[in-house]
Image 1 (cartoon, rainbow, N blue to C red):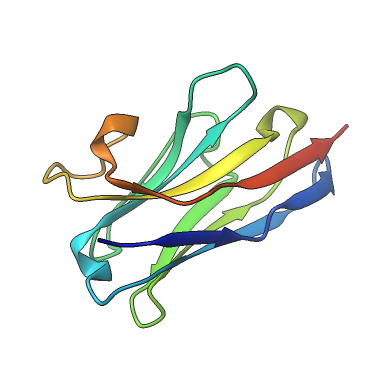
Image 2: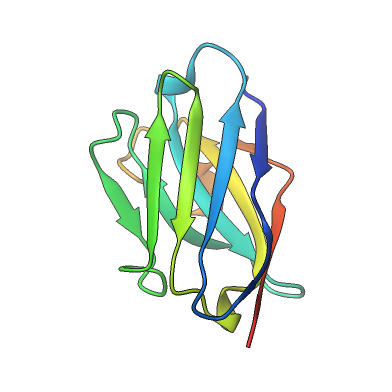
Length: 125
């Protein structure tokens, strides 16, 4: 089992940047594909980005491609989401998630086994 804790959310103006961090507990961090999702009130949780166990492969939702970068640090047991050129439509609660799914870079919510508590990102226009 792994516990995930996100930090780094906040309020930023459109065009600005924010960096999210997610610290994973336990010593089995490399077993998990890691992902970031987001959810607006009244909407379904949606995929943002995923990174493979080795960190060698990444996949992004079209809506964030070219603006967001996912990375991981195995030594620190952490995954990060660097968000640049933020838009008001990026406003949501952002969740870190860990997956044991054997498929590469799953994007479905149901493929992820563990979730953080979420961190609010608000982009003002």
